[in-house]
Length: 183
Image (cartoon, rainbow, N blue to C red):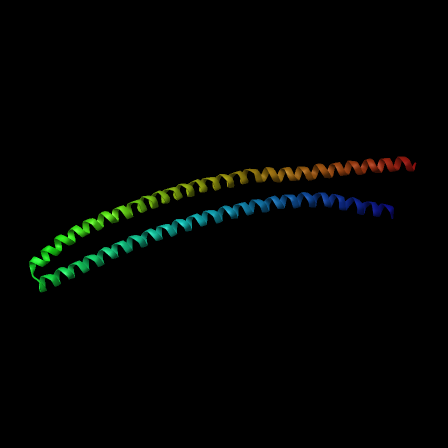
C-alpha cells in the first residue's frame, strides 16, 4: 500500500515536469504564430495603403482630365456663339484674351499641382521602399524563426530529459536513504 502511494507521487512530478516544458514550448510556438500573423497584417495594411494612394492618384488625374475637357467644350461653345452673334472679330478678341487667361491658369495650375505631384511621387516612392524593407525584414524574421524552431524544440526536450533525470536520481537517492534508515 505504501508502494502504491509512492508510485502515485512519483508520476505526477514527472508529468508536471513534462507538462511545464510542453506548455513553455507551446507558448513559444504561439508567440511565433502571433508574430507571423502580425507581420502578415502589417504587410497587407501597407499594400492596401499603396492601393488607396494609386486609386487616389488615378481619380485625381481623371478629375483633372475631365475639368480640361469641360473647359475646352465651354470655350468652343463661347467662340461659336461669339462668331454667330458678334462676328469673327469678337471671336478673335475672345481667343486672344482667353489664350492669356489659359496661360495664367496653366501657370497657376503648375504652381499648385507641381508641388502636390512631387510630394505624392516622393511619398509613393518612400512607401514602396518602406514596403520592400518590411518584406525583407519579415522574410528574415521568418527565416530566423524557422532556424530557431528546431533548436528551441531540441532544447526543450533536453531540459525535460535533464529534469526528469534529476528527479529520477533524487528519487533513487531518497529510496536508498529511506532503505538505509529502515534497516
